[in-house]
Length: 459
Image (cartoon, rainbow, N blue to C red; front, side, top):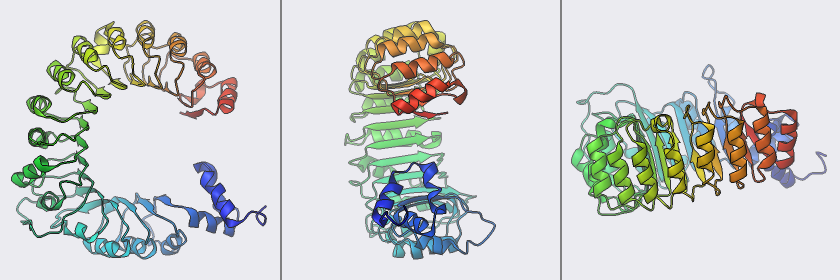
């Protein structure tokens, strides 16, 4: 067999193998190992930091077509220089395991000119981000700052003569007051190019508020904005974004910290046309925000609300009347479901186009209400019921009866659902392709049917 198959055919077979079998290919023969490595385009490595990786350059040099590399362990300059010398075709590099030096990054920019996506961890004090200009094709930067910082350590001035960065995506983590180097992004990023902007665990934006405000107001094609645990800066961002004269923002995600007034101001004043809204704001989202969403964004097609403790069933029903185009609805760990029986049924009657529904971790959701609600969702493709512990096999009968086009179901941690119910779903869902359920709930018959119907199971 090894002699009959040519290199190209073997490589094509390797590409089609799922992950577990593919990892054993290199053990068959030296030829198979060489062909596997030379045809691999993406690698994720977790290297031991107890030795200096003597064989690492040789290992990389065998991967001649490598264009995406992720390393999740501590990064050294020696390691980064090995990447620079052996991976000239890299387009994506993720160094999430630790901080890297600017010297090694400059070497990387020279040796890997095709690099367009870069994820880095830098240790404070960071005096400058001008090294980003050395990457000619850079389109996406994911930057995390770690360590102690001093506000008065360094004063970074931004030059208007810097060449524009044509970044399409910026994601920043751990920015604090005093991280003046971040201002380089606001002064050099091309306002027309940026489409994705994200902040996570950030308490500052570089501290030149005028520069940042001007940057936000001038973004012409911003499509997605993510704000996770950024209470200190969210008012600054939302107020300036509301004044942006362009209306390109279509996706907004805010988790774990907002300001009620600034969020309400943004919803009222922005002229953007949101298509996707994802909010996890237990104490900062109330009925006034939902009423404004229903009034302003009636073309919304994705709405996800997590841990919505301060909203009522009446507000959600009113919102449902306005969002007739909605295709995805998430109500995760929603107190109103636990406290107001019946409103889900009325909500569902106005949302006939739902294809994706997430009701995870609603521990009091019962069979009767679920059955009445699910009867309105005949177009449902994907359903998440994870952690809905009161649901039983009765709910699955209603699900299969009403949702004939179901492709994916998540039933993990649903203690009331037993083996018979899981088997019933497998047998009576013609288009089911993905199932998440505990392994102990799968009978031998269920496993045979899954293999016959090509259903993937995840536990």
